Image 1: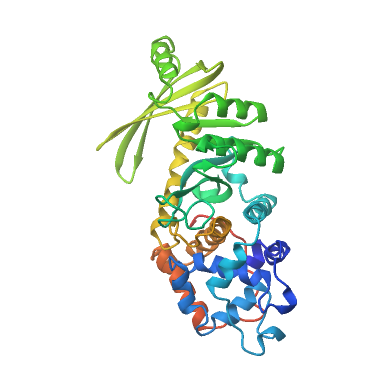
Image 2: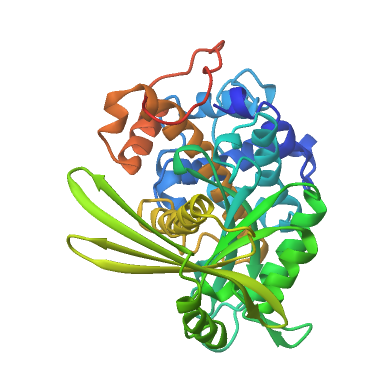
Length: 425
């Protein structure tokens, strides 16, 4: 997978700032970063779990194949090994996190060049970015933001994550921005909205011409975010809640009776279950000093009734466009599913891998690198081609692959995999 999709990945790893004297080191930079990535790909849930098996069987030989530091490297003296997690964490703590977090951006840029996301573009044009914040780590008691012992209670590390929606509903980590509960320099509290504005500046700088549609929860349905989207020429689909925008909500309900033509009723049968969705929409509503459009979609099934509400700056709303916009807005659950998987399926989100702040940030970045590789490998290759891969959980599949890498050496001239595609048909 690495050779097929990201042939320059080892080069990107080796180009990161190297604080060591390489002439005195046994392991290359790519080796160290791959060992961190392997911690997440093996889904052991902790550094200790990876350390217990890192030098078993064929694992050191296969690690050398991945990082282009084979067993024949004279630094191994004929006995290849995998570096310990203490060495990897120490190295990660000495490299600027802003530099490391460009790695997943480079990976997504490569996938964009390969046109992997074209089938998932909204209206054939807009790349869909899903944004949300989560707890990165539940810090140990006594550790402050600098990772050193400090008085007071433990504080959580938070992160704002952006995922890009891909084919077959798969999502890929793209950008992320760390959030500090307290900024000692500016003496101000940080939050998701401030982190979003910082992240949007990076995105505009990195991809100034990329057509983007943001999808987020009701927190982002506010003047600051909407103005930023309008300024950059971005589209948005944000959840609308009465408590978040009471004035907008009241105006929406007041104008609904006057917009009788803006209605659509649909019915759908899925696996023998009937459902009905009624759409209503109103355009040119006030949001702060600007204007937005609102869509209501009430879904009724045999077991439940659910109301979905969104604000969007897509204009010229027709029934077909409303259905498509609503379907994309409902994709917001993808980021929640990703967080849940990373927290509960052996990856280790919320686990404290490193107390030191820079190392913790870099470990989170490598977690997202591992996620990109895993989505391509698991969903774009294994589960698409093999029935046995579809009959096991992702955690079970990851551990089976890790056991296979420890049990048998990879062929030295292993050909790259074929085309990466999604779906079972």
